[in-house]
Image (cartoon, rainbow, N blue to C red; front, side, top):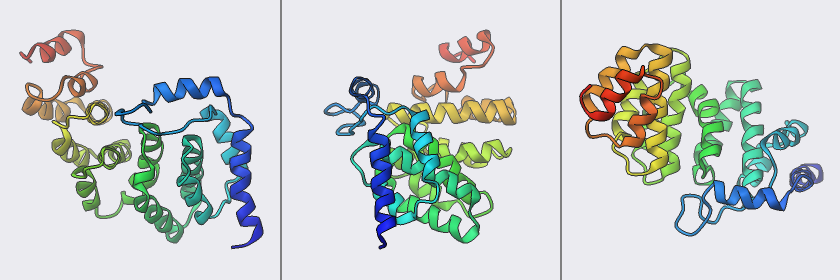
Length: 241
């Protein structure tokens, strides 16, 4: 590995550190639930805002995949998010061969994409875009994973399909995850059901809800019906829709 390639990774870390704010870091630690037993347990923040991370990422858009992967392996949350920002931007400009390499790197490192903001930024923009014209069986495997982050990746990937007017995968993944016990998965399911209804027609969403709304977790249901007319929303919440 050449000297410049090594320095690029080091420079990204230094650039992010230049924006570090200990007060903001403490707030982020609480917001992203990094305490013992919480979903982000052990995650470390240095207090860099997302706009600041995007500025840093813009300066290192040509970082090699090997150096991006090093950033993904960082214990510092902002370094992992910056790595994903760069990866998503590179994907948009890449040819099909480079896109495959980015997609493969992403799926090989899902254990490092381990908070909801990391997933939500990257899953639609990498996994979703890659799978638009390909077999999507991998999503079923991710949806059945023991990892909440892989399950959320499966659900959020469907956001891309929904934007293109496709809801089949969103409903099939939601079917697998609809009774998931984790709050972050319930929110993801409800969010994608809502988007499917808003962007592709309410009838299909209501067909899904009619089969599940009595038993599905309230968090998922509330997210799914958030933009329903108030009378209809209350009917679902009261179990008489």
